[in-house]
Image 1 (tube, helix red, strand yellow):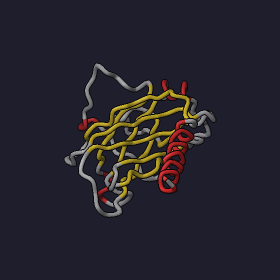
Image 2: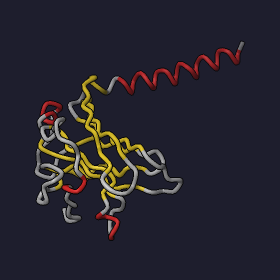
Image 3: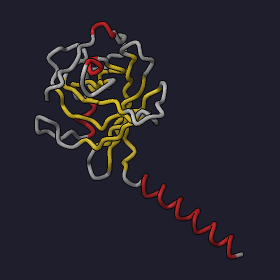
Length: 170
C-alpha cells in the first residue's frame, strides 16, 4: 500500500510540473519553415510562442543527423530577407544543440533596442540562419535559413543560391 501511495505522489508531482509549464504560454504560436541551405542535410522549423508575461519564446527544431558530441550550431535572427547582403543581426539566438537539434531562446530586447510583441512578430521583417560553426571557414556554411514574419512568401520557393552570408561582426 505504501508503494502505491508513493507512486501516486510521484505521478502527481510530474503531472503538476507539466501543467505549470503549460501555464506560461498564452496558446498563440507562429511556425516558420527553415530550409536546407548547404550540402548538409538539415531542415527545420522556427517557432515563436507567446508567454503570459508578454515575452516571446523562440524554438528552433532541426531535422537531420544528430551529433553524439557537444556540437553546437550558432543561430541568428536577422532583419530583412535572407537574400539581403546588408541584413543586420537582430539577435543572437541560443545555439542549436547537436544532440537534440533544438534551441530555445526567450526573445528579449533586440540589438536596435526594440522588444517584439506577438503581433510585432507576425509582421517582423526578418529571417533566421543557423551556421555550422561560430568562427573560421565553417562559419560561412549555413545549415538552414528561412524568412520569418512579413518576409514569408508562400508562393516563392527557397533559393539557397540567393542566400547571403551574415557578417560575424555584431
